[in-house]
Length: 449
Image: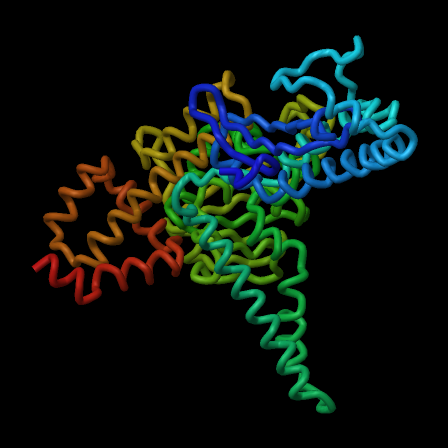
């Protein structure tokens, strides 16, 4: 409530809107009481936003008022000095209503301030005020807790920053000493980690390259190149957590393939060695790029837990039909997908794989829609992973109860169970520690008993 006749006031309702009004007076030598009253009014339907904007509006509107009053005061003083009107007004009969005096209408603001450009200035000030008030506060749409991918990315970035700080500290402590070769190698890796573009992209943006720069533009494009049956075998191994090995001379092609394939997995399940001159064990990476001359152990080639994609020089250019100009490079290659345990054509496979293939084969869905479909499918199955983790690892339920839970989740099939167990490794440390501390706290254990 405004304490006096002059000042700001707030009022309104949900139906008609809410008003911020600032009342003030302008000096007028021809007006009763030597002044006229005006108000600057701001109307808004959002009550909370208007209240939060009160300090901003009050300061800016007060500045406009001070400028108007300053100009009017100069005109008033000049008129009073030239022709005092007080005696004439004292003899005029009193009336609470505004009316013409001596045949002259009430004076306009331009007359009171002696500023012909007043309305243009006011219009500019009000337009700026509306724009500034509308953009100074931004509403954030909160869609619940952050996803597991977001938590894992934040944890990886935190680890990189911690390693970088540790290396900087060790450099300061060991200044003046010549490090040995192992220290140099380790230091180079640690210094490179926070600035290396590929590693930073790894943690911040899992769509590493734009489709225009990538060899494979999308998951659908990769499926078209490999063929439906070969792609299904490859995707099955990716989702199961088996090691995916690509052998090719073109490191960019391998990196592009991994960038596309990784979109099927949660961020925490992705471990990539993009290109290496020696074979790396599966515990180190589930995506491995190798140069063609690297020898792969025989037990890996015959293993059911690995799949090999060999990129060979094509015997004829028509092996892969060129549909676009940027696919000219792919026409030079032949892609051979092999595994020690080929996926049978009639095998049902994990449910998510069937849904992914259905989305990829549906030409009515754009690439952007398919990307969103992948996000939704991953979130759906990560929620199932969270339920299974709490049920088995935290609550330690018996095997019979676990089977019932899997049936309820629609994941009782063997492939679905394997997928859930692998995806469980992708849960963030934050989620696991929070769940363990919450469930195993004394309060929660007492409530369960």
